[in-house]
Length: 388
Image 1 (cartoon, rainbow, N blue to C red):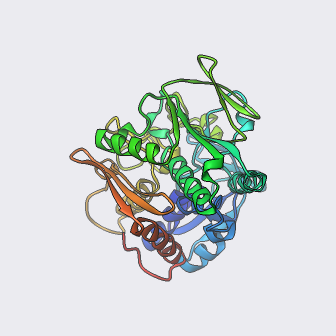
Image 2 (image 1 turned 30 degrees about the vertical axis):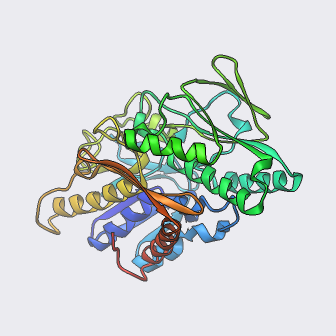
Image 3 (image 1 turned 180 degrees about the vertical axis):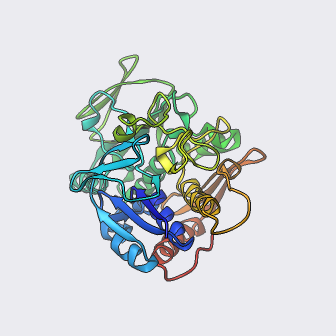
């Protein structure tokens, strides 16, 4: 039985391990975290609808359910030519036939970034957002700034959706508490039209939502610096804030940047449509670790990461003669699909080459996203089959 090692225990890595095991491979997943953190439903931690435990699935439980091995260790280096990976605890490892890289990405480092908290950062950061918000509520008033950054060299590595979701949820949370009028909420982003990848109609609808929620919007100005109490923009204008919730754009993982594998100038791995790393027969890359090629509006999302994971397992199985058929590619599956939660409802965002839309879903949208969270955990634990 061929051995496959999956480096990374996030959304892409966990799905790859499950899919590879189903194809009949001996699979080991290596992760520096002992749980899969389900970021799409962590948006409710700041408002107290979910606890940190609610949005984490122990990797051991996933491994036991699907029959693969999990090893909690930190990957510190990778070599393509020598075909090994190295970890903090066990050193160099070579006992495998295929390597699937799903290490994710890091974030661009803005000046003063330590004065911000990200909804796409570590679980500790999201918990800290909750604690800081509670302190402001107890204080009786406050100013909160929400924003996300861009990466011109890798436009697909922007994380805007979760920022919008947490901002809208906090707005409605404050409204329910009857203190929304005591808080000033500002949204900021360096690009002129944040969210433009969803299309012009979506932008108009978002502007309407901002107006209805009394959220100030400042866009088209690059970020100069963050201080403990403000965001300083390129023209030296200042956004005062007691809490800054900011998600930088993605940057390549340091292990990948220091490897001999082909990568973009930002440190994302260059891959074929089949997810095989270019020039390396037995190495694949999926999710945020990979450079995604496609239309200008493309984005790295969880559902695409899982498509890449399953395609990789399928393609390795064909290569090993375990199944017949054509190799699968990720490019045909590129689209933007997100159920954007607002706390009191939601909106279905979708973008493809043929269509761009943002469909309001009052009340039911919130319930649907909650239901998806339940489904996702049950599927990962092997209690129900994959539905989508």
